[in-house]
Image (cartoon, rainbow, N blue to C red):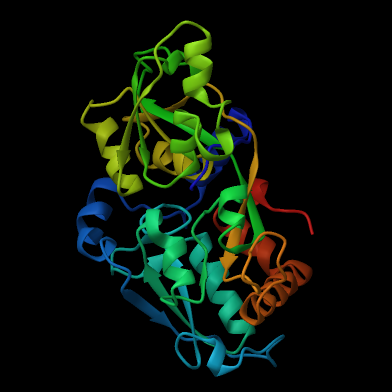
Length: 321
């Protein structure tokens, strides 16, 4: 997210087709999801608490003094961003990131509490003590690693979503030169489109100007679903998002959207935790971070991680140990 990265298009579309064939696939519509969550999305307030499953001995422990709330593990996540995080029809958080966070809490003997957070300020939420960690489809970047420690847990690509029929005939990123593109604030999509942060000097804006074309007009929104609605209302030529999200919306609304053109470089997404030193770059993990990593590593080792990804048809994004 969170991101501009890539798995090749045929992988995205193949995952989308699998998702459409799965009877257990989530069916939340983007417009309704946004309306239902608008109030919650503007603040970092706890939105749900889920009890741990019947538990074996915790694989690691975190002292209460190191937690925001004793006996609880508070997870910041920017909702909605399906299929990684979104609200179901009852207003409960769902998605692959939510399930990974829940399993981590279970393995630490703690009760998970999801804190809905605006992505643009989500790192500040964890560094200021509003939550213990972040799972929110957040790409691992140099800029972010200077602020928090990041534990890779997934690999995603990013795509352009356009209206059905692809009227602008977008086949490669430079086809967007001079056109309007919507993306969520604080994401690497915005960085790529504008050529900033880790994409400084090598983003799409620079590619366009080097080719003698106008840079894209980047329409930045507070929430990812706001960016999608910019496309729905025909205010932009494309909406830039991660490949799992693009595939989800294409499956949910095949008569409205399609994935256009190519995607850009695969990149890891990371679980973000406060770092264990004043300077975060290359710092050791904090007590909380080490416990979370231990829990996640145990999920990978016993196959639970793979099962969660398979449930959401995201196995192609699994990281290797």
